[in-house]
Length: 462
Image (cartoon, rainbow, N blue to C red):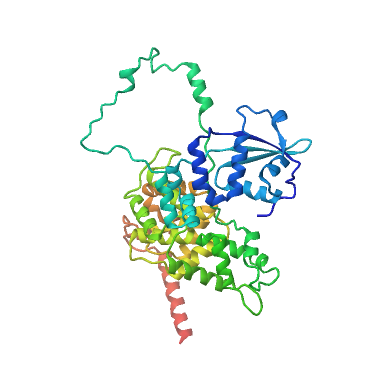
């Protein structure tokens, strides 16, 4: 990623910390994070850690970036690259401000505890990709503990109240204790996330160098490439390989249809999720989380099933979410080409984020074995009209519709569409009674006129 032009060595910086750091954090940094961010980024984190002050004063404790450059022995661009790698994995946050000159504040965060690191989908799989299976298992064993599990042993440990006597009632917490709790409450650590529509274009351009790509081709196909990356959850390296196979060797042009075909064939052949391990496991998770009946949560809160749906929608690429949702209903169901085209075309319109589109796919497949473009677009237009923009709002929209549907099911035939109520003539009413008695002279005359017109009309046609 290119370094911003306004990032200069003379700019001052200050180091603060959002969490206390321990020796375990140092071990986690070296063994778990360094394979991801690189040695320079790990050294930068260590250098910033050494400069942390408990109560820093900006005017007194700030220093120029040249201090870091001389400490690490790297260029300014290397320093910037190391910094953004630390930001990406949630180890620091960077803030900036401009008064007489631009200055920065680097806020330090502790590495995730090993058990949370290995439970994190992005970080653990990224480490697995970086070090390989054998080394990954070695690292996991280094952070594994062995508690007492002998069934023939008895726990004779004393409890707190058996040893200590607390003079203050537990139900009446002193104000000083409450103040200390608030001051020492941990700050939420940054979360490593994938932005499915974000492609590292500089890296992609470098990886495609030497493949005969025509000038301006990457820019002219930027939108389509970003959408394909988001639809399949492709990283930059995977994307560059697919683009390389989609370049015309004679003209140097990128074929978008060929690129889409290559992406689908690669996905179908590998069947591997870059986020969740594999499709089979994701299907198992989706089946486990699938609600048997809709539940009624408290206002503004998500049920456990809705939270599981939200997690899948935010984590899985659209293509994988589509397949997982279908197979969760029936393991023999498959994604047909027309379904994939319909969902991909809607994603291309940029009316919904990938996560919101995933919730839409989930909704459409609840009562249907497959997706039709007409119905998908109909529901999408209703959501756009209702200003649904986030996956949370989409889940609320589904819940509201189900609630309304249970009350007025006889008035609706499809999402957002009221049944037409045709006017019913008097003679079709259940309580209609035909008039009795002799016809009036006026009624007889009207009937005679109608019969004459009918007879004349018949003669004309003959």
